Image 1 (spheres, rainbow, N blue to C red):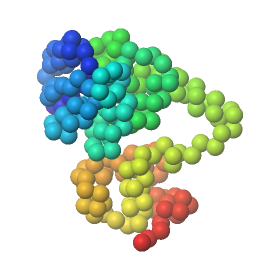
Image 2: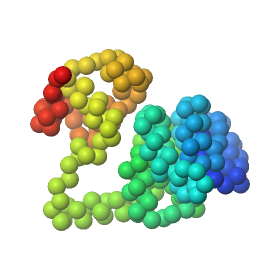
Image 3: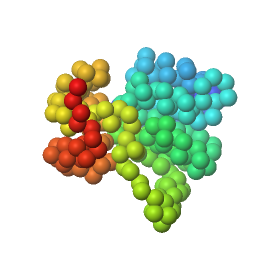
Image 4: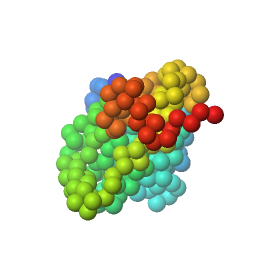
Length: 217
């Protein structure tokens, strides 16, 4: 069962999404919010697996700001950005804010449901058009000879966990130190290893040494 929080400033949209998602036996809408601040509060209160976040909410906090702040206090929650803007500028901002996926409101219902399933599994989801644009930008940067440092794509929390793992701390110790669950530590650790294309702890330690992350207090 995937629990979902809907954050959208239009009551009609929220109602329609509740009906659509409620028709799935493996989906459960646990709450809704009309703007970003309320969405953050409801997410902390209800602990959903997925937050379906509207990008543009004129009243209160917008979706990008809310996503960024929510990921700081609940790094394990998956945020799926739902928007009418098919614009790469918003796409890149959403990813930078910490969103796990980006889906257009004009997309078929089946695509929205597939996106929710993907981000709930800890995967990223982008529409085919968005993926094409991201790859295009990456290739353009490679052609321009830019030095792409994968380390900079890690979130602040992922960088913290990378350093602690490299220093030899166990998952439970890291969880206690950062006041998060062991499961969240394991998820971040897995994401770090995947992003950096590392397979073993020795490889991770070697990488951390090269980055100058092993300064003990």
